[in-house]
Length: 116
Image 1 (cartoon, rainbow, N blue to C red):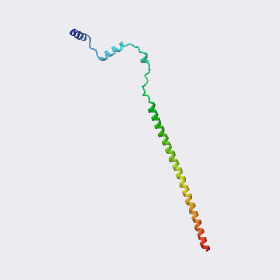
Image 2: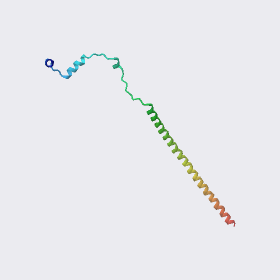
Image 3: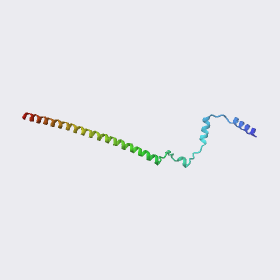
């Protein structure tokens, strides 16, 4: 029986004229029906991997900590510069006051020596 099927297939293949692939594809395409299901007409939404609550919480905490830390760093550096400038001005004011006082004291000492 298997030999009869093989010979029938061979004879059917010989009886059919040889066609190229493009003609066969065009013939099969023209035989298609133009029906589509409701599912095929729907838009395909991209599949998004949901962000878990734990990962979102950790990421949010770290992001917030970094932003708060950087803001605090720049605030502290700015305050340090301001306080350093004020301290430097106070040191220069104290130095000039000490120099004036030293001048007054030397003047008084010279007057005391001259009166004796």
